[in-house]
Amino acid sequence: MRVVVFISGRGSNLQALLEDQNHYKVTHVISNRSQAAGLTTAERFSVPTTVIDWRDKIQAEAQAITLLNNVKPDLIILAGFMRVLSAEFVAQFPRKIINIHPSLLPLYPGLNTHQRALEDRQTIHGATVHFVDQHLDRGHSISQCHINIKADDSAETLADRLLSKEHALLTTTVKKIAQGEIYWRNKQLYYNNQIISQPILWSNT
Ligand code: GRF
Image 1 (cartoon, protein in one colour):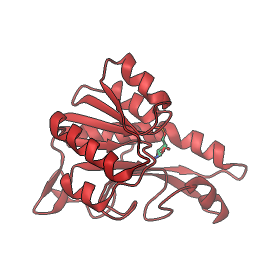
Image 2: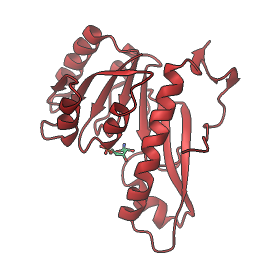
Image 3: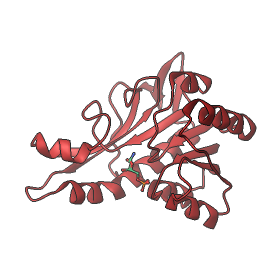
């Protein structure tokens, strides 16, 4: 399975994907920022990269669509990509785009998820891998990982603790898609012949 990854910054989720490419291959990395550290990681793994200036969103999306139509990925992964894709863009790649979001969706779509979980005095936090549709952070959830919130957690400690779990969640989910264990049939999402009505929780994540 051919995968294209969109990033904006650090790229630790990208690195986890690059280190785990037995069942899929990252064939291209797209960043909206030329300074994104993840670009250096991609180059270290000899993966071609393209920086697209997203200040003109219409032009940027047109450039990305042309590139994707050349590269022909089976799956597009948003891994810390900090731009919202338009409905028109998403419609070009139906059921092909997934995102990793650092909250237990539908809780806390958007930004500052760790801080918002703390302010609400949640005891459990986590991350979600979901398909991307035209609504921000509201496409079909696939899988989640959970962590306990400690009394002395700050947004930073929570983010740090969650991150390694995110990596396992994302790579496991992508592997299951690559192996055909997670798939769409008649507009329903399945995991091993069962419709996914609740996000999957794997014990290792
Ligand atoms: C991760 O927390 C991811 O869930 C969120 O942005 C962060 C990206 O981190 N969407 P990295 O760039 O993969 O290190």
